Amino acid sequence: MRVRRKTVKGRFYYYLEESIRLEKPKVYSISLGAKIPPEKELEKRKKELTEKIFIDLLNEAKTIYLTKEHLIGIERRRRQYEARLKRLSTGQREEKDEVDIVNFVYTTLSTEGVPITKEEADLAYRFAQKGVRDIRDENLRVSLDMIRGLRQVKESKKGLSVGFILDLHATIMEGFSEKSPGKLRSKPAYIYLKSYDKVEEIGFRPPAPDKIKAQLDELVSWYNSSMEKLNAVELSALVHLKFYSIHPFEDGNKQISRLLLNKALNDRGYPILNISKKTTQYFDALVKSVEKKEERPFVEFVAQEFEKMCSKKGV
Image (cartoon, rainbow, N blue to C red; front, side, top):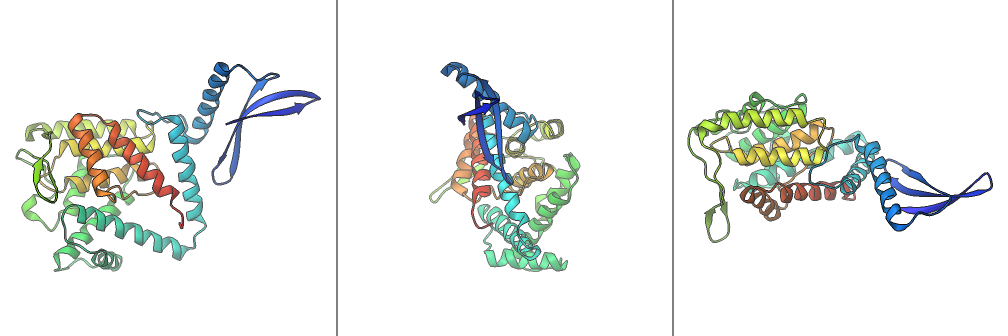
């Protein structure tokens, strides 16, 4: 922000201004009067200008952990990103969409130990485009199911329901009948992290089977009441985190968590985010939030990754 002096009808007046480059540059300002106010008063006026910018860009969206200044920066980069996308040709947009989906599928599945290559994920994408369903190769079949799940998210109507979550799980786990696709677990769940030399349980236990349905209902209710009020970045991070903490299925919980994160972004018109691309940092932030029951670390990680994605050149 800067203080600028202007002449109005032969008299000097001071204005506090902030120039933000969105789709095109936009200047926000508030009048300071005929004199520059003392430092304490100036700080107060800076907050007023920040609030003015925030309301204009994010329509009074609620914040919990992220500052309004941070969210303004994220929104600025998101709009610049969307503007760059609009300048692409139809063919270039289709190519980018393919790359984004293939990378999401590859990262999401390889993070879970599925021995898939990017070439296989790309082949699965091409099969999906042609409507191919009957595939014998397990890696291709699992990849195809994940692509179908992501499409289900992108084509869904706004809002969340337990039925949608069950259907989504049935889609991505279709090839694993032994994992009860589309059905809530009936046994206790334990969350383990794998490293190069050991596998160990984290310091958190998901709820018992008889508590799952009630907690899912609570999650759905929270999401639907927060969808249009909470800013999109925190909404996406928190729905991922809350779902992951419930761990309602026998398998596939992390994949569904990432799909729900993108469901929240999609519901608000934001682009998809490949959140597990930085696997170590992703799990560090996720486990820290789950174990300590502190949502902030994971929310901040998601915000950081979303901002980086929108800042990436070459789009």
